[in-house]
Image (cartoon, helix red, strand yellow):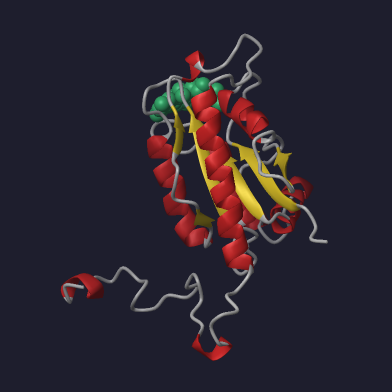
Length: 218
Ligand code: FNR
């Protein structure tokens, strides 16, 4: 029998009453059957210092181990000044170093975010998607779970109550598992010699943004 699929969930907020941590808590109950979400808290990760990248603190080693053990990553991020919070970027940076030892490499990921504003986290989520390019992380495109007006979607205990939001979250998690399976299981209907990687991991003229494609009008 296949082992359980494990998603590692990371909230980008350290705040005690965080909406985003509450969203992550809710996500734990919205995964498809046979899938679990384990969480990693970003507390205790010191500011990244490249002088220390070959001798990282224990908490960073733990983060990298947990990321590597996971089949997929769920980022639940607030938006700070139109971008991802420093604590999240800091953890991502630690996990990606030293060069050649990027723990995030090849992971499928889902992104969600909650804000007290109307379109909050949209901009942060797009920044995170940009970061994923260099990490070689594959974020699911849709649905985009951008939870605006968060204050209206949680109860007095801080738990997510909005059913529409939960439905989007459920769908995104299903799509994440589907993407993960596509990445992990190569097609058997195509001979190995004819297979192309589902995702290019090296830079080619097709994937690089040198402008070649655009100049050719393709
Ligand atoms: C914010 N907030 C915010 N909201 C938003 O929609 N866009 C933004 O750019 C910012 N910028 C921002 C910067 C800083 C430093 C703070 C502390 C807050 C408000 C943010 O959405 C709100 O504080 C959320 O409650 C943060 O998420 P958690 O901690 O509840 O998960």
